Length: 325
Image 1: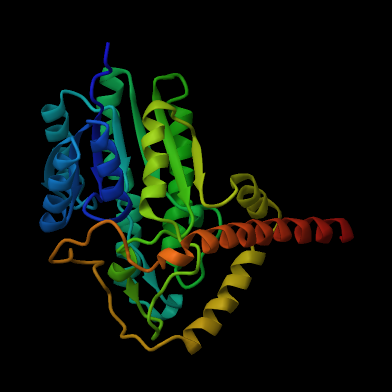
Image 2: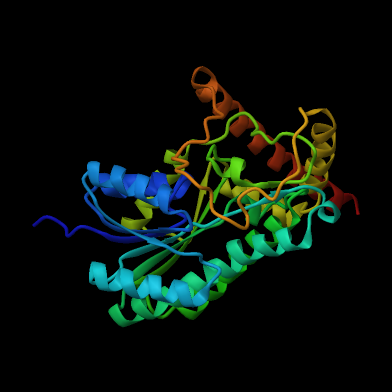
């Protein structure tokens, strides 16, 4: 017998990884409820999902509003007759030295990236418990392990999300059919960089080897059938974890020095809160458009090797220091 179509809810579905994941699920014939702040972007992705073979419904929702999230979850549950997977994907950022960024922007990052995910989990967990199954996918990033200078609030939100997931897994340990799955990608080429707040005085860009949103989406889709606690995309998980244990400050200090150098030499940009406080007016799509097709494969391989070498180097230096001490 053919498996029933998966019933999937995705927040932050109007662009980037959320949109790519919606399309990937739609190609499998999934039934989808898509949420985000921007209606134009949602309708664009929903139309593409229907053309790809899925069923798609949209709801405009701001995940920082717990009452709105509760209604969003109840409506999704009614529409789909249950929820098999909920992808908590909303993520925003602001770049700049901590003291240069308005406190309201820092607060908005925490509200969206941490409290928003908590609001979503609070809304869907009772549904999972009642039906005795379900997978909650929590989009974090390697920023949940490696601190990101010039994005202090982002770091706080991602480290917090990792702890939140671990606590939930402990509480759900006696419910083996309910899963909490964290996803940790490296840099991803999405429209999110255009939506970010920026107080560096420089134009934002991505490093070589940034992932395609579709690469992360594949990992998310796999979790529907093979849930796992942690999925790293674009970096070796064991190296990232060891680096955080052995030399937690080394990479952050190196990154801070690099960003000081970059912001002083990059093309000038205007300070702005981006789309932190209000949704973008139109559709943004899946891809950020900053990768060069002819260089993507080589850059990705090089970045992966350098990233692994950098983390492993940090581990080695940390171990050497401990032994010397």
